[in-house]
Every structure is written in structure tokens, then in C-alpha cells.
Image (cartoon, rainbow, N blue to C red):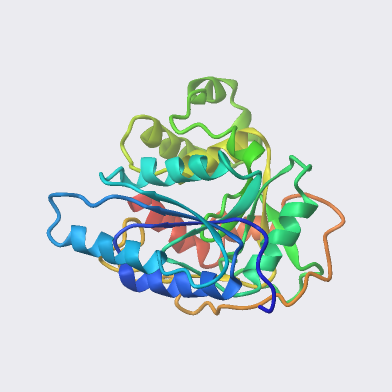
Length: 297
């Protein structure tokens, strides 16, 4: 890119120097003028992790372009749930809107201007909760527009606004009330609704150390949408034994890292894309295997 990126970027990392370096190199090419760096602290009972975290801190501290930098390097380990949600809250204490990347989400270069343009376009439209760079393999050949809308949260390379994040509840405080109202049955079939509620119950009870189900929950109860790009702008390079939630075989190894040189075609409406919904709800396509993976966590 010939000019610097004006949109602020939050980059969150932990203990994986190899993937961190690849993602950070992509950020370096984009040259954001404002960069927020969050690195969770090491677990003292994990051999060698102190050294790994220090390597990660050194990688992300190597900033060789004009840039305003803020750092949140934790001394103690907060875990996935609190480290990620806390870093995003810290980010939005300073920024109205911004791009969020984790250390295993490798972006193409057009991901950055794509997010910037859509953050500005939809900043006052509360129907849109987030902009995702990831397309799960949905067939995009017949899509009329450069992006479509989904009710599913996508957090492998994304962007959002402070006022959307302010509605986020880490502990799902009103889950019992929402379940009693039965309003989510308007959005899902019986089996998918049951699966969603089991997931949310596990989060609320502390049975799973994560932050992203809570974001998905916030979107659902506020009837909000994710923007999904026609082309896939993110690759998850974190599959492996050292991963928190993506250990084992890479379910998306056939996906390519693509570009959207320019957004030429904006949708005329904001509604759930029907075929995308079928693809991602598990009836067809690669997302079925992703759902199975999540259910096994």
C-alpha cells in the first residue's frame, strides 16, 4: 500500500511467535498510523512459555514506520476469555472504531481498506454490528455485490465500533430473561436453537473459557448483522497442537487468501442472505464441520 492506514488496528497475541510474525508482517505492510498491541502474560506452570511470550513481545515491538503505539503487555495470564475481551474494551476506551486481528488471522492487504471503507459507511447504521474479512468458503461466483450480510458473528479478522461493543456482556447477564421470552426461536429452527442455548449456558456457567460466544449472543438479541466479503480476505494459520480452539486438522486448508481491490458494488438492502444462512447453519458446505468442531470444545 502506498499510503498509511488511518484506521486504528488492535493486534492481540500470546505465545506463538511464528504465526505472530506472519500476521505482524501483514500489518507492517498496511502501516497503520495507530496501533494497539495486547499480549497476554505467560502461564507460570507451562514450561518455556515465558520465553515464548517474550519473543512475541519483541516481534510486535519492532515497528519501523511512523505510528502511534499503545501497549498492553500483561505480566500475568488472563486466559482467552478475559485477555481478549479486556483488550477489546481497552481498545475502545481510546477509539470510536477500529480493526481487530489475532495472532493466527492472516489478512490480505485489501482487508484493511475494505474494513476502513465499511466502518465509515455503516458507522451510524446500528443494524450492522461488525465487518468480517473471512468467508467460510461460500460460493461467491453468483453474488451481485462485493459483500453480503449474515446474522452469524465472524471474528477471524474483523472490525467494529465502540457503541456496538458497549452492548457486549461477558457474563451474559440477561440470558435467563431472553430464554424465558423465547424470542430466539424466531431466528433459528428447533435443533439449531437448542445447540445455541447449550453453548450460551456453558459460557454463562463458566464451562468454557471464551469471549466470542458472548459477542454472537449480543448480535442475536439485538438483531444485528455481520458483513461477509465476497472474496476471502483472511486465512486462519493457527491450526495445530498449540492452538486454544483450533487444534488438529485445518478445516479450511483449501481456502485462498484473496483480494478485493475496490468495493464497486454495495448491497441495496440489509437482510440475511438466504443461501449463506443455509451454508453456515450447517445444512450444507464446510461450515457443518466447523459447527461440529465447536460442539466438541
